[in-house]
Amino acid sequence: MLKLILVDDEKNVREALSQILADYAPHVKLCQACASLAEALTAIDQHQPDVLFLDIEIGNENGFDIFKHYPKPNFKIIFITAYQGYAIQAFRFAALDYLLKPVNLKNLLEALEKANEAIDHRKTTLKIESFLHNLENTSKASKKVVLKTTDKMHVVNLHDIKYCEAERSYTTFYLSDQSKIVVSHNLGDYEEMFSAYDFFRIHKSFLLNLDYLKQFEKTDGGKVILKDGTNLPLSSRKKDELVEYLTKL
Image (cartoon, rainbow, N blue to C red; front, side, top):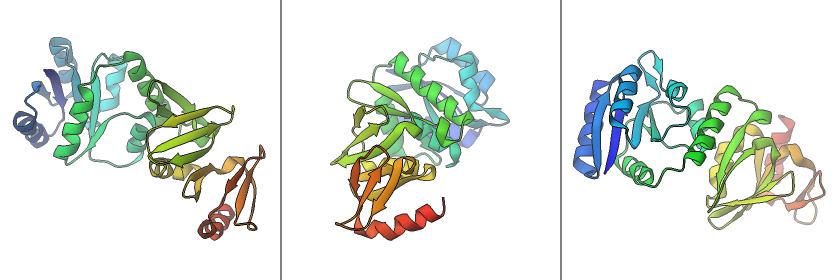
């Protein structure tokens, strides 16, 4: 049975989530529902939970401060937030779990199912370090993204990604050191994540980091040429859109 602690300053949220857990998650034991970070720290020491449901903004407190007390936690943290701003992007880049308010039952149960897997402390630490790094560093030059393969977790600098290639539900990352990383996520997920950092979908199968673009040609069906000489196809419907995008850089 999973031991869980819930931390949220809103009484109605604590009550609603407590009831959902009681009704739909019989394998979860809610050890305590806390209204403050100080209360949560005491509860963690007392109950030694497997999972922490943690609101990002707890009154005047910041949920991220939990890492000051537990820089390498031996429990899984699932963040809860009503905001879809920069912090959500940081969660996605670091592959950390989060739930948006109002919490969707399906998403909650899926998060608990993932939390039921064995904790890999090394991977958790890598995710947290990347997450905190990205919160403090907003530029493309310093951004890090966590890429999970079947057997490893890679922390990659965003500017080191030359381009991504889609193959069914998999995406291959081609890096500046000539290495490749294959992950089981579709290219559309990364197109959305990287769109604010000058990555452009040049073709249904290719997402290009424009830092590596040397030139593009409209002849022979269209193609782009990278600084290292790599040729990639350019979709005919993307030509004008790419020109417009480049003029705004």
